[in-house]
Amino acid sequence: MNERIAWAREGRRARITLQAGPLNVLGIADIRALTAAIRESESCTVVSIEAAGERAFCAGVEVGDHVPEKAPEMLAAFEEMARAFLSASPAIVCAANAPAMGGGFELLLLADLALCSTRAFFSLPEVQLAALPPIACALLPRAIGTQRAFDAILTGRKIDAQSALAWGLVGSVLAPEDLSATTEALCARLLGFSAVAVRACKRAIRFDDLSLAMHAYRDELLPSRDGAEGIAAFLEKRSPVWAHTLSKGDEYR
Image 1 (cartoon, rainbow, N blue to C red):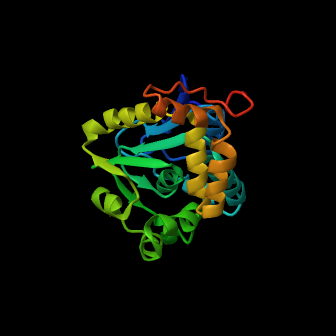
Image 2: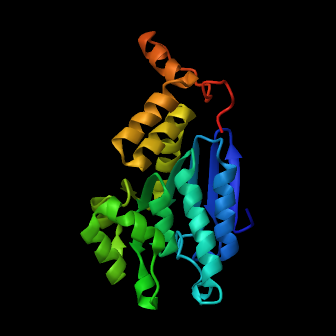
Image 3: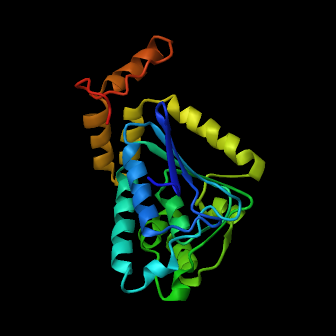
């Protein structure tokens, strides 16, 4: 991490705050810092990502890092970050308090749960610079459908908050003054669950394949201590006591 990508841990929750200037434009070092922050949070149950300031959640990656001399290094760092997000065990909650453009839009796509304020809009302007948004090209069609993905990527137009909600880009749109409290409540709810169950559910959803989803449940969640505890607690009419452990008793990593 660095002074532009703040990371803090509170019990089983990690907080990542983008504070990379007024527009939160990310350089290569910032992308690497985000990767490090996600990896550092691996033993948490929840990671929240928010931004300082009100002008932009994140206006993407430095345009100067897209020149031929720098682009390969930038793309390698960006791919490494995306893979860290997609393979992360904790639930990743992203709250956009302001516009998210380019790589900032793609950060929301990498999150498991996304919220935004009415001040936010979303756009992928890369085509205007003869570039492309690789994460959006890979993930957006599944998230919102092929036609809408073509629309967003090929036109680069702004998608307002209510359209983002209708399209399924975000799960909630809130008044700016309510976004933080709603994010806190969502994270608190997730923290009440077993980290093992959260990870297994995430893996099953990411697999997008029934046999692999069944594998995650049968071979990963069922043998775990928490898998047994959740059912036992329900049958015994008591609150579960999560160990956040695997079947061997090792702390969940």
